[in-house]
Length: 346
Ligand SMILES: [Zn+2]
Image (cartoon, rainbow, N blue to C red; front, side, top):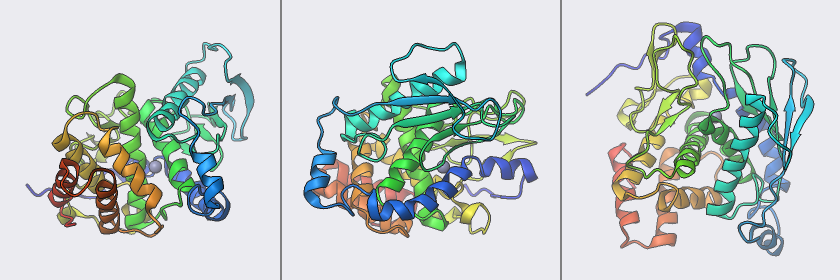
């Protein structure tokens, strides 16, 4: 079935939704240039030092959360309100930021032996109640920032997949970066969505078949007709609303959207690699944070091309699958099939 993807549908509101979480990438991209020289484990650091930094046993990694109240102002970080080990505050935003940061930290620590976002125990700082009615959340290169939403278009930005999405942009940046434009930018977006979904699924113990594969589930306002911001299972179906327009994501290269908006469609065409990850995960079965997550994570670590295209990334994941599981494995066969199903031959 061919469907029309009108990226102008919904006007300003749709544009706002598409640019959701954009700001983080602008910060992240500017920081990734710095990260490329001094903060990239496994790439820019001497091998022995990298091994020491990256090989701490799981469970011995340094979780250190610091939550701040922005008090509806723009200044960062704001007033410190909860630090590691201190009790719940009763402020739902503060406590959600605190709890979800640990869930994401644990995903990277327990499954990928990564010591925080930079691999070196970076403290997890987050500011909630940023500005007034702020319809966004972002990673600014050193901390998380969450608006409260305006209550009309968005309810909040502290849902786990959103928190994991933004923190994963930090991981991408510290791993060598993917330039936030065109296909490499859509890959950056997609990696963040993939690990957003993995954080949710692992947290509630859902297999690939059981999961809903939604990103930003429940964050849309009460009057918006939509289940989430994006769907990895069915890109293009997350919302359909008079104000917000139609979810513009394609699920196949035949529907790739050529546009100069949204940094060349980074939040749009990410639907294609998102769907490939989903297909691979359900073809393989089991938990998506197992082999599929490990292949994606390994590919990010070995990728040495900030301008990677979808085809480059697909090839990198095939190499990762080969290295981890071999060319005769189901992982290899199903991964190649998944890429083919979205129109990418590897
Ligand atoms: Zn993003």
